Image (cartoon, rainbow, N blue to C red; front, side):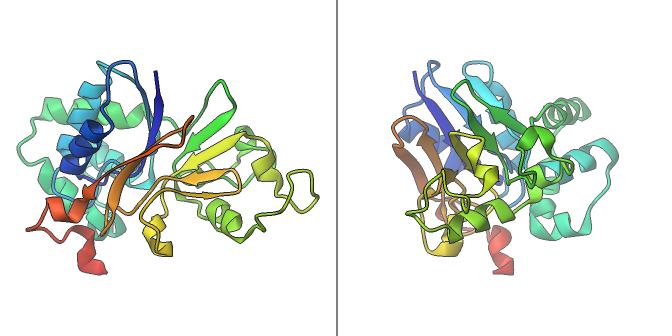
Length: 244
């Protein structure tokens, strides 16, 4: 019985399928997905269908990412956010061209049910991006921080590795949780192709939306599982790399 945290998928169904196979996922495993299921590669809608099906065989926790917020608004109202369209939304819209209204409605319900964060029985926090309240996520006044904030990760990157949790210099935000698992900011930005650990934060977004791999981490053993570079699984697509 394992619990795995899974990084940002961004429409890469082939990467997700490969990752699940390499991790040898069974119905005994719990999967916590950290958001950004869509936008990038050409199979965003198909990813959502896969996740819905997976939730029928496994215990799954689905966290909401910023790209999921944009897709949800489009499914609900046909509203096309210009920033979204230029950052993967175009590919997501195209992936729905053969989906019925009923299928789109089912996907809308999936997005509407996404959690902003999850805290497990061991006081481990899972969310897409971050939070700003020094008192923890329950006291966050700006819920968009859960899927947009980057300051939590940037702060962790600057911490002295020898800084003790009891020090007055240790950030209060980090003291509330045993561990924090996030996505949102690709570790490939820091020349790292695997999940990164700074302080008590694990960043599991390894850049699948650009030139990296899709990753999962066993939260107990810290064993890491990865797909190939997702762009290699879609050799005839540029995805969001057209902006790089």
